[in-house]
Length: 312
Image (cartoon, rainbow, N blue to C red; front, side, top):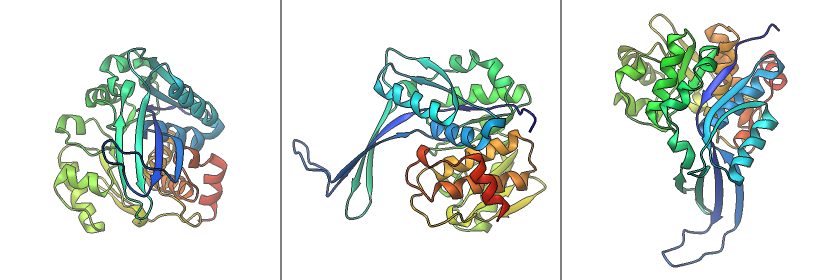
């Protein structure tokens, strides 16, 4: 394979501290937990890992972010090193690396979460301007909404001005202005994010089409609504496609499936795949991720993705 331009991701890393217990403690109370896991998280980090592994030896994935100078920053760098992600990090000594406390109720699986974004919440437009040459040389630039929106806007603008394909995964859900949406070649909301952006409840393919049309009217180039077990709905001004999920085996955990799709989809676009092929590649990446536990640790390698597509 000839060398392809890299995928450049703007996003944050979180260290997720996950506690399983019968119930949450009251103020001033201690309860005994049943299990604990410390896992790498953050949508940007997960997408960069997915992209690096999906690209394989023929491609590259960079992440633009901020980290503190602490043990969680070492964790981030180790995760990226294992996956082949190239870090473009601003070290922020005035803050800490992002972290999330996740309580899971043992009987129901319901959760309560506290996020302390730390350095990731301090990413600035200047961090993007400082890496303008990297962004301009990318094949695809992708970002989300866990870091400040103005940083995302700057990255999308720099990429768009250079003719780089842009993807915005609008998660977590937030109100967005039309000027920002107009910078997006592809917008990749899930059902709830599409509803927040349009006011249209997305419950099936028809309503996903209606939401996509509303987003196209606001200036987005193309919309990919991720529909969980119903696959993805693609809509631009000329084409509509529904791509079903690609079953890679029994579902173990769906955490990170959306990030897997976005990372795989970005790689496919960077390699010049046609849109239907790129969507199937993203679905295969996501399909493999849900067959194993974890988020970053569940991302699939290129050989696995190609093998699944060959038999699907």
